[in-house]
Image (cartoon, protein in one colour):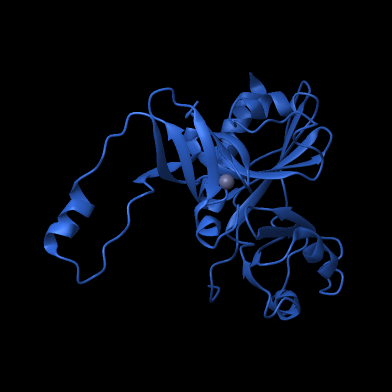
Length: 92
Length: 173
Ligand SMILES: [Zn+2]
C-alpha cells in the first residue's frame, strides 16, 4: 500500500511522514532550452495508470529524498531508494 | 538587570507524572550535539572518550546523522574538542538549547507511545539503544529506547510543552 513507505534508512513509515514532489523520471531542461520545452517541463504531466516513479521526501524522518516506484492503480510499492545515492550509482 | 536574559528550562513548570504503569519526566537540559559525517555510528561512539564525552550516548538520526546527548551542560570549549576530533570527517552543531528531552517509562510506556507514533515498538523491531526520527501526533520527535521499558523523546524546544501536555493527557487516561 502506498500509505506505507519503506524508507531505506528508517524502515516502514506512514505516508503522513512524507512530502511528495512528483514525477521522478522528468529531466530538467538546460537553462538555454526553448520556452516550449520549459513550458512542457513545468506545466505538462503524465497521469500514468500503473507503475510510476515519484520523489518522496521523508520530511518527518531522516529528511532524505527517496525515489518511490509505486502502482497508481493497486497502490503497491515496488521499490524505494535513496534519490541522491541512486544518482551516485549506489543502491541506497 | 542582567546583561543577557537568563536561561529558563523549557519544562521548568512541569512536574514528573506518576500514573499506574507510567512515569513521565522532563530530563535535564544537558547537551545535545548534532553530528553529520561520512562515517558510522560505532566510530563516532569510539571517538567520544577521546573528546571527553565518555558518559554521553550516540543516537542515530538518519543517514549519516547522529545526536550525542548527556545530562551535563557543556561549555563551548568541550564541544570544540569533539569538533576538532572530527575535523575533515564530520561537523558538529550544538543543539543543546534547541531540543528538549522527555523520559517516559513503565510497563505502559510502549502502549502510550503507540497512540502517537507509527514506529513498531516491539522489542524485537525496536531494541534497547534503537532510535527513530518520527512523528508523535503532528510533532516531529526523535524516539529512543534506553531500557526495556524506558523511552526518551527529543523534541524541538518550542514544541516541548505541547508534547509534554499531550503525554500527560495520555498518561492520565
Ligand atoms: Zn527515512
